[in-house]
Length: 336
Image (cartoon, rainbow, N blue to C red; front, side):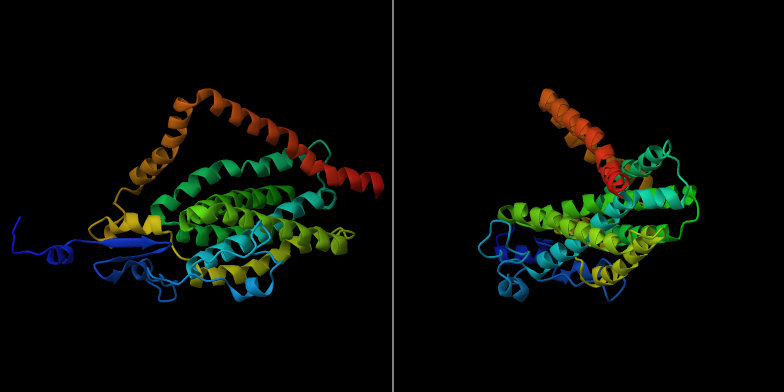
């Protein structure tokens, strides 16, 4: 080592990056601005970003921000609040759309001429959209959380809203299958993004806040069903209402930051523009294997607990899915 070179000079020669929430700097350059060629992409906040509580939360002490066992809402950075707001509103719409297909099952069945013997098979086919969603969600490890969420949200809005214009059963199954797939992608990636963006002491609160938005979405669906449920075409109107989520997509495009962990991984390459190799298929295979490896290691470490938990989860889904689908249909047929 050359003694004439001071430690500060060595520090200038080294590639350094710092990650905090969704921001980092490499050689003094904001890499976040290179994540997209569009100038409207959300700028990455500096490392010293001040934490604060939105004025809405301060003025509404009993509001949504602090009802989860908090006397006062936690102080978070602007990027963290943006992630929570976008994820929560998105979860609201997904819960709304999911409940529409449940509360209006009798109207859908009548309008599309679905027999009693086939109604269960129709909804089972739709729910299988969850299976390919696991593979699509893994793409966020390659292309980033932000990009996958933007694309999946756009596709979800199109197919969910277009369900209101379907004219036959095959269209309904196809549109809802795709909508269900990208709805599951959003839920998975948003959960990961929240865990990556929040500190240890606030993650539980943030996940609880994120999930609580689903209750509001379900309430809106029930209120609209009270208005349109008496009409044969009412379920179509309720699906078409989902077009309003386009306003969220516009806000996401401008304000949703990238995960700091993903940006750190990109920064470790020599050139950010060359972070994707020519053979994207091999990179996707590597992403799939890296996601499956923790599951495999968990099984090896705790095989009995792993099998017990997965069995209970499977039984729970097997028992509750039919009940959730047919309970409102049963009440409508029994009580009118």
